[in-house]
Length: 206
Image (cartoon, rainbow, N blue to C red):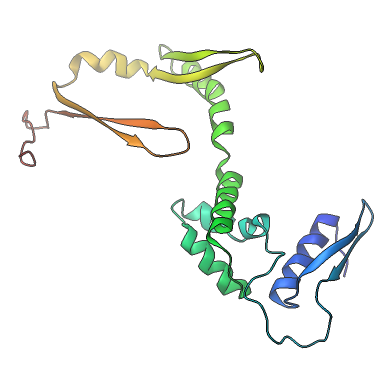
């Protein structure tokens, strides 16, 4: 068999070792032009007493199996990862490895939290450019001498049409918030106001 790149060869060997050969292997030689591996077990052509785990099922491989699932279903969970690996390869993966693999898959599809934050200046700059009058305010926690950059605390923006329409907003009687338990701790604010009948919805209050 011929492969275009060394990476394609490595992926093919890894996949074959789990789905078909069902044996663990280790690398004995690796360079730009050569990649040599050997089976860990003595090769007997008999697959007796097979283990339910496989040392070559790493996070990157598991993540690659779930990119499509994560893209179609952002709420795709760890139990789905464990079951899908079991269905496709016949092997069990521990919870922690499944967790890190799912995290890696999400970062490949959606990017990391850090990369998303880094895109905010360009994103909000584009909003201001194409929505003249939009206000953006940045609040920083301080200057980090080691990196030569400011550490962002939070950012606020208001679209120009929202600013103009604020005077026509209905009266607000309640403002509440809830914590969002993600990697970075944010808060979601909720406001209660008049409905279309010029009334306040009090039916759920006790």
